[in-house]
Length: 297
Image (tube, rainbow, N blue to C red; front, side, top):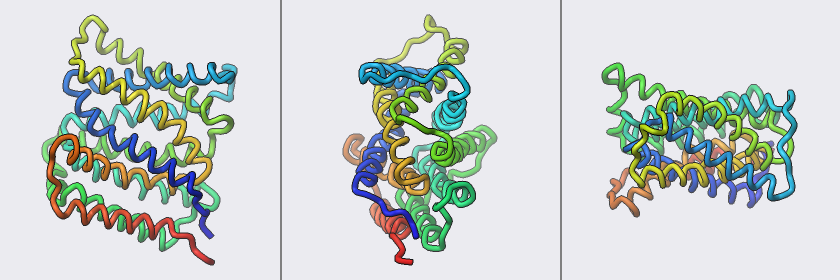
């Protein structure tokens, strides 16, 4: 029998969808005048500062530097530093529509990993059909023509593989977070992002010294948003949702986040999605409903 989802689980899920769904647009703004590594460094650095301030302001403390930090190091690498860079780097070449389709592999990979590693997360026929239907919805939502962009020259193929690699990192993160991250979610989120910033910020400063930076204010504002909302706040909610609902439920985010990207394009950028986009969104919602429907036996 599958785990029953609470109203709080669904509220956390839709909050994450809104936060992470905005990342595609703000990444595009940031990359216009900043390198991918600088964007990631700014993102995790801002997030780490915000969460550490909240940790100490609330009377909590980060754990002592001992063996208890190794889970934070693992999740910081697999869930933050590596996928943030791979996806941002890949988006320099890969269109957002195709990136959304590639990212939709994450839920499929998650249910496979969770089947073998997490108790109570077995892959059922119902769950597999639901997630496969959701993936088809992603293709319709982002536009079937986007699939025609798969392949191309070596740089384009490598960029696509980078985005796909980021999606697979997120799948591994979902499972590992459930297995190895314990304790207070705010402290865990702050510690993880602190480790990520200690890894990425020195690399960014080595690659691009501060004296050589000349970003547009829009890029700086975009990095600030990425750090505070889709990273700092979202990481706390993410850890909480993984703990309460499991990685397979968490994977639903990667089906709904592209929907937010499309809606932002409609409302903010003045874009006009085709009828296929709305059909795709409906198919995604049906697929999620099938995958998450509680079985009676």
